[in-house]
Length: 259
Image 1 (cartoon, rainbow, N blue to C red):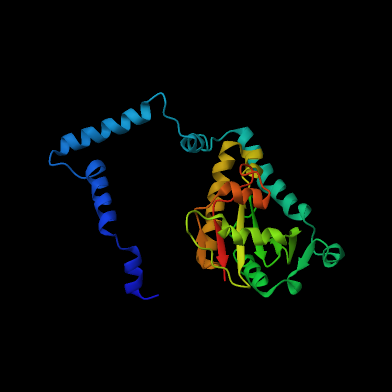
Image 2: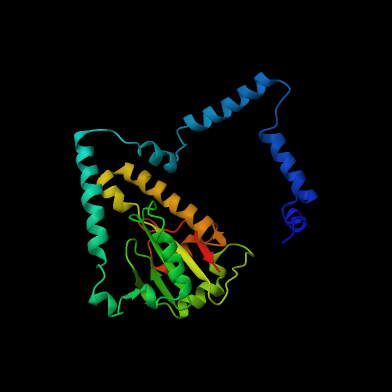
């Protein structure tokens, strides 16, 4: 796409420009009387934040997500980092063995589709990414695979999805309005599932903050290193139903397309 075409796509129409100017004038345009402007804005925000009706669950989680050093916290932190993560990586999914090579629930990279193998090999080269509270699903054709960090094989997540893949495509990826989902025959759809409870079990509310920061790093990597498109606005309820996740302890904030 040329620069001219891109500029045309992002340019305001005369109607949009009028709406935008009206918004600026009503909300943020600087008054000639700076004191009056500052005072009116401070009054607005102070009344909003001090109102008895005002409540923000996001801010509540943020405030309660700070660390407070104590002997109890130190014990939990040590237990969490050194034991639970190690146990999870070694136990939930086995190490390379005959059980894995049987191919019933696991697929060695040598037998995985080329696109899937390429994505996993890149992820293995990014050891700074922490997948403890994130599960990454890779949808390719009629199968869903789960990436396993520090392994050389994949988990067949719920195995074949068959007709359900058709539903995803017919529903345009559960996108809003007239957005179009462009998939090619070998496209891989990447679904990072956020599972903060794994860290919260040991670190409480601070664990939610920890998990969120790590999940954000993964989303950033997927967007800029492993995909051509990021999907942000979609019906989370429909997607949750489709993936059969609850949307609370397991949720999807963004998903990505690798073509």
